Length: 195
Image (cartoon, rainbow, N blue to C red; front, side, top):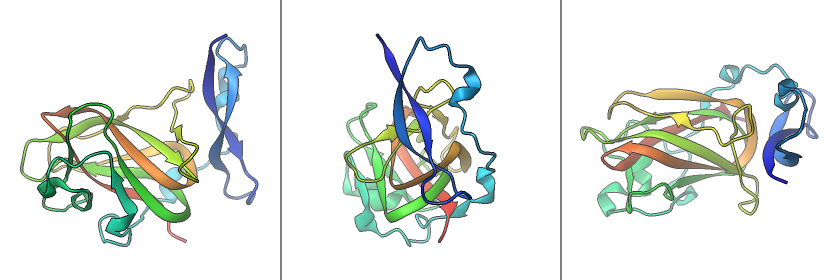
């Protein structure tokens, strides 16, 4: 029997801040109504959308990890929003990623992306993974339980903001580019609640 992974709410910490960080196996052929898979809370993720520290350096470089850096000129610390370069990966395939360790569990609601400064290079689409312990990872999913593919950029300088379907309460966030213009390059800021 085929199974899919669907989000499940875990609200053990407080009733005012429901969190999406556990997964439950549900048969793909289940007859649950579509609304069963929607988080049961009405949360406006935009109300919790402060920059979490990529651009201003509050997230230190030692908390950034990458699958690969093609060259020093494109290293992980250059992935900060509005920096005059970008993180760029080599090889160029969908197995590349950049990961942020937020040092503690944090509410994350979305992110802002840019391409590589003055280069006609950008990430067109990406997926987002998250984890509380770096051992068990889950994708941010769409309403059908499949990994959500987020829209990225259409040029190298414009900022594109996306919000997750539900807030994440997590420590690690990983961005996985899925399509790109010429090369995999990205600058970004995480959004959420600064505590």
